[in-house]
Length: 328
Image (cartoon, rainbow, N blue to C red; front, side, top):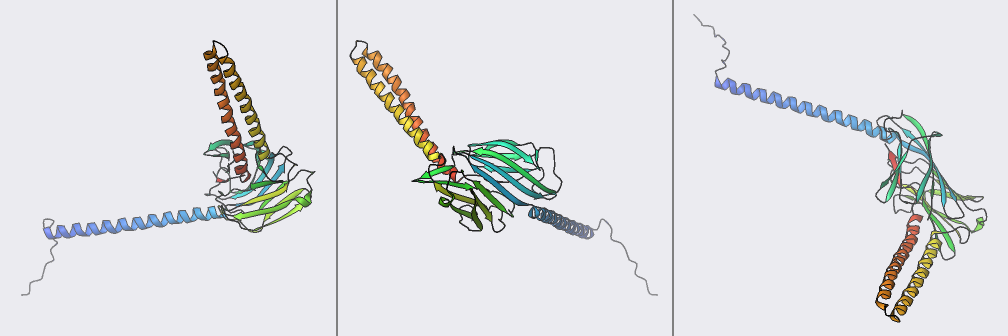
């Protein structure tokens, strides 16, 4: 009689079976962890791609700068920055703007024609203007920001020529600039035929020529001819004969002469005090007083140094203007 084979489940006490079970559980856990990791990476990549897509759709559609040169050498600037934001992009509450020149004063800030909240704070050697409310988030759409400000020490003199070298946009924008237009309004008395125009486009230090420039009456108008990529901008140069506006160089020369004359006067006074003290028995005390005044004269030297710094600041400021910005 043939005996049938009876299948017997392995007992948990079987050590080989326990080892197999642990091995299979380990493989199962490893595969599960791998699947979860792959799924997380794919999800994060999708989120990043979506965010990058939204950021790439955010642009500065139009950057318009109106620059009026005043007879005293100051500039009054009105910027209109039209931006388009997207959900999940950089522009959530508003925009910010950098200014490398510390000598600027904000006059007014608006969004879509209405006054809006802003604040100005120091950021290294620059100033940053933030235009937003902390708890107010913008809906996706198009917004126009208007910034009016005043700045000085921007006109430099070389020989018989004055020059305005102005960075219109700055180089720090994280969005493309589809169109940039700068209009420089010159003094009425300035002869237009003696005005020369130049400009540069691209990243910092580049000398691209993607622009058009022409004179419209007493205004020099510059317009870009292509979309500027992030970190690209436009700087303009307007040269005209000296004598129509005050320049930073002239102001610096005035202060240098002033401090030099003051130092000379204090030196003469100091010398006279010493001589007078030597003729009297109280000469020691008089000499001490003279030294004290000489110390003030030393302050005059320091002031002269500050005046020299003003001239340097004017030159650097000529290449100033906006430092770019982004969204917040």
